[in-house]
Amino acid sequence: MEAICLKNRMIMEDSKLRNISGLQEYFSALQTNSNYVLVLSCSDECSVYWRKFVEVSDLPLRTDIAWRESYVAIIDGGAIKVDQKSREELDLDYKFVVGHPKYSVEYVDGQLKVGCEPLEHCKIKVKSKGYTGAMGTHRSEVVVDNIDYSMNRTGINMVVIDKETGKVADSVNVNTYADPGLTIHRA
Image 1 (cartoon, rainbow, N blue to C red):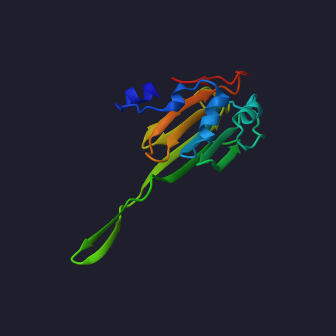
Image 2: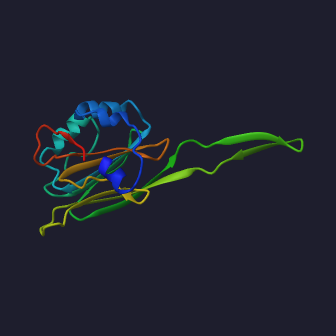
Image 3: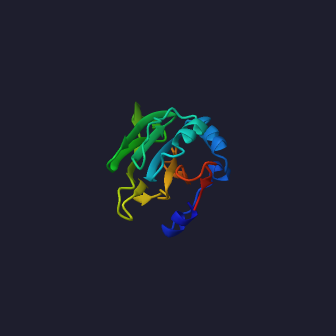
């Protein structure tokens, strides 16, 4: 996250998630707060320790990810909205309403006027491409407000977005290909 913020001249907001290093504790924190959108995108290969990842995360995700398949999941407020795999590249768009509507009530010329500010939407573009043969043909992207927050590393790349602000709270990678300990990696 620090590298992404520095590259894009952004100020990194404080997030309690960034202080968590254990995967089980990380998902416990996510599940106790339904105010997040969690985006998962596979790069290269993520199937070797995938079942263990699903078990530790306690998410009801599919467990039939095959060798070097593309995979994308989106969990919005605790509900699974997307859980897709493919032998081909996955390219998805997702959007959600940021925050809550703001109402105003006032008297104008003796009349009661009720107004509502328009709601903002957070738009997310997600890509996942498993390894397909030639070098450099695998990819993970999680683009929020035209900035790619995915770490694009082998395994599962996760981006957490705060639903109140529409800002990215954390970006991590778990190497579900070669790390049986399922360590959380940050840039």
